[in-house]
Length: 368
Image (cartoon, rainbow, N blue to C red; front, side):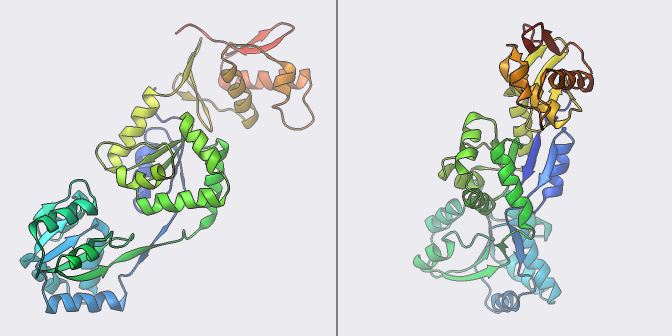
């Protein structure tokens, strides 16, 4: 298939960098919907952040811990707005800079500094264990926190004899528009979504909470277990709330947005159940049918008819069985025949659906 994600409906639950992720998915044929589970609440204008920054400049730390790229950049931007950026960066240049992952390291480098050590697993636990193993007693440590809190870093360092100063740059809040969040949870449960994407553990937790509140957790779990709904995370940390809830999830070996997109392409290229027909491979997606790499312009009724025929795998469905799919009161043999004719016309193939005389209709299936 020229576009490996053709026909896939994918929901992005993140607010940050959603356009970048959506563009990469759309270039590969996906239909993307935005339904943030959380919003980022900035503290860049918070008087407390500026006061904490002044205190840090007056009492320079021995170690500065950067936990996120967006948080570290935001901290420097807030200092710049307050006329403190030059002093803050000078203090940091004399301290030991520890980064929780490559994104935090990148933000440090963007400000003309170099990280002394990077936690490649992007976990607070690895960062904590590294510093505790070296010893922090008597040291002053400044910790730039991400939106999910301290992850136990402050407590661990204080218990080991360090003096800790916390810098809170941003936090998490409810989605600015909760309606898409609720709507696309229902659609994911009902079968109208192929994949839901997560880029942060708090976002995954908020999504699961929404699923439980909607009363559709069992339906989501069943679809994920069957492989009909892909719950894709940027990495294992993000996936952990999903896995803790007993949901089947997937994530790439390399924890980046680009790697997440490649993981989805690989999944749908290798694992999509396709049916061989005289017109090419037929793949059914949540919201579309793809024939020989082409998304078919079907009506909702046509899509449901084709889905039923595909599920039958070449076996005959009677007119009565197909009539139950049609909307309204027009469910007789003539209505079914008209709907099948529209399906054939919209698919661009008269041979895709066979008429079995006196019995009904069947998908034209060929040997692979």
